[in-house]
Every structure is written in structure tokens, then in C-alpha cells.
Image (cartoon, rainbow, N blue to C red; front, side, top):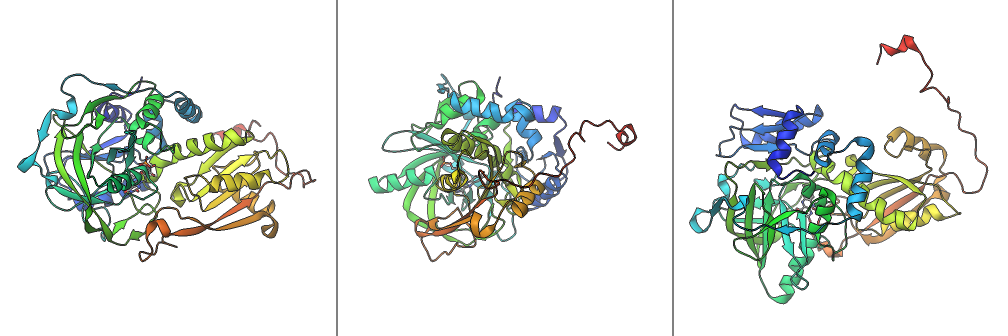
Length: 458
Ligand SMILES: Cc1cc2nc3c(=O)[nH]c(=O)nc-3n(C[C@H](O)[C@H](O)[C@H](O)COP(=O)(O)O)c2cc1C
């Protein structure tokens, strides 16, 4: 059974020895340093209890695969199948009767104060304190289909903040529709939810998909929703915090810089101002932080599993002999994709390259390998690239396709985002189809061969 809420997940992490509590004062601007240390030691989540606000701050809950296995309540070998099964079996949400826990406390008007929340500035050149793990709940104003996705918010004042929604992400598309209709958009930023909802945000689905159904499928149970206080949107009933807001697309402010998931700062640019209409929260709530910046951080690890599962599902429908897919956290997740497959005819690996480049993942590097190559092993992939590839024959470069988000190699602030194009490279590192190839010179049977003298070395 899925977690009811964020705090039961944190309790489970605690029971597994995955949480460290820091009770001495730590400045919010030092939180990034602590989390970088924790990450370097493939470390625990950290709770900052004395952070100068009334709320404890927990960071690093998506910080490694062990925690993802706890979130999905599965084992390493079953995780991928469990995610694929969930995607194929969506479950609609349920709207809760009565007052939901996320509205135990409702702050409106003069009581709204974003500066009362423990929000760190993670990278020294950032334009200020950014709420990084928040999930935006919005809807398409034409179809009413709800969407959830992660978006970062720069705090501007007690009741305003700003954000950057890429035009090809659904919140960005919804905002463009509100602007066309001449309406202000209403949305909610949700912090502290069942972790499956956070993984759901990173699943790549069509614009007509109701994300609550996807989340239900991945949880194996309906998501419990509650109506917002200031709009007809619905949010998870047990969220720790909900920040309800309105966006005026014509009221712009300079947003940024921000240390991005690429490991580079994106320069400031004009972005809409959002006005907070209500902050609601549970009794004794926990706030959440999330380190981003130079890979690998928990922001990358959060994306990895859903991106691999979405891409696998999309491509497998047309290319059934695909056996495995890896997206590399170290390359910002979406920019570098390795796919193992057994080509069924000459040129099929190239078709897969072109199909992968055509997805919303927008990879810059696509490498196709034979099924005997472990896609998750850099040394296996490099071995294939070294000896199964002739670059003049096996590399394809495609130019002038839509750019991946915030790529500093083409991120020219003078060019409007929807106008930015980039190139992508595909490498067919499979053995040439239907032709003889040298025999692999490995040492078969070594893993099972009993060598008691080596056992003590682990
Ligand atoms: C922690 C985190 C923060 C993110 N922040 C942003 C952001 O500020 N703007 C943006 O356009 N995408 C951001 N993304 C990427 C989107 O959340 C992601 O691509 C998602 O699939 C978009 O969902 P949607 O298209 O359903 O809204 C972020 C991703 C993560 C993991």
C-alpha cells in the first residue's frame, strides 16, 4: 500500500537509518553545503531543525536509489516493472469530504508571509532564495485537464514570487493559453507529498493526460484530493504546505540567475510575477528543500527513474527488441541516453536514434548498443563505442531541432526560448547488422567459479 503522506514516508526513511537530524543552528544559506557533503557520501536525508524559522526543513529525500526503492516499496530488480505496470494501469483520484489536513491552518491577506518559510539560497550567485522541490498544480483552461510538474520559485516579497516555466512544459503551455484568453491563471504550489507524486511529475506523458490518474496507477491506490481555498483546483489532501497563487502574465520581473540542473547559472530574464492568495498547511508541518546545480544532485536522481520508464515505454511500443534504457544523471538526465536493442534488420538502430530524438525528452546524445552491453555501465558503453563503431559510418548529426532546456552551449538570452534550436548526435554502436564480427574474448563462467581464497576480500 502506498504512503498516505510525506511524513509517513519520512518516518519510514528514519526507520531505515536514512535520516540525520541537525539540532544546532545552521544558516539557510549553508544548507546547500551540507547537502553537497551528504550527497558526496551517498548520504542520508538531513533535517535542519534549528534553521531560524518555526518549521523544520528536510532535504535529500530523493537523494539516491535506496530511497526511491523505499518510496516505491519495491526491490531493485522489480522497480522498473512496477513503474511500467503502474503506467499501464491508471487509477482516478478521490476528492475528500470535509476539511483536509493540508488546510489545518489557512493564512490569507496580511497573514501571508513567504519569508516565514525555511527557503535556502543554494548557489551563491542565485538571484535569491528559491523554493526548489515544489510541485505546481495547474489546469488547461480550455479542457480543464489538470497537470502536476516541478517548477522553482524565486521569493520576491512576503506575498509575491516568480518562476520560469519552459514553453514546452505543461504549466508553460497552460499559462500561454490563459494569456491568449486574456485571463489571470490560478495555480497552487504543493510542498511535502507522498513521494510517488513527485516521481509522477517527471513521467513524460501527453498533454491530454490527467496526471492524478498516472499518480494513482503508480501508487496502486487513488490520490486523495481536496479543493483549494481560492480556486477550483484540487491538491493532495495531506500535503504539508500549499501555496495558492495567481499569475499575471503581463506583470514581469527579472528572475534569476539560478544554478540550474545543467551545473551552470542561467542568466536573469523577464518572468511573470505570481501573487500568493493563500498559504495553507498541516499542524506541525515540515518544509522541504532540494539541492540542484552541478550533477549529480537529488534533482537529477528524482528524474532518472521516471524518464527511463517513460522513454522505454514509448520506444518499446514500436521497437519490441529494445531490452534496456539508461539516462545519465551526470549528463542532466535528458541529454544522454543509452539504449540496448537487438536490431531486426539493417538500419533499425538508426530509426531508434531518430525516434528518441523526436520525443519530448530531447536527448542530445543517443547511443544504441547490443543487448550484451550493460547500458548502466560506463565502461561497457565505452567499450562498445571504441570497438563496434566507425564514426564516419555510424554517427548521425541532426541540426535545427528544438533545444533541451537551459543548455548553456546554445542558451543565448537574446534569442527567445521557443526560437532556440540545437543539434543532436546519434551513434549506432551495435555490431554491423547481418555481417560477421570478431568473437568477444571474455572469460565465461568467472562469476560462478568458486575461489575461497578470494572470499574474505568481499
Ligand atoms: C526539482 C525540479 C525542478 C524543476 N524546475 C523546473 C522549472 O523551474 N521550470 C521548468 O520549466 N521545468 C522545471 N523542471 C522540469 C519539469 O518539472 C519536468 O520536465 C516536468 O516533466 C514538467 O512537467 P509538466 O510538463 O507536466 O508540467 C524541474 C524538474 C525538477 C526535478
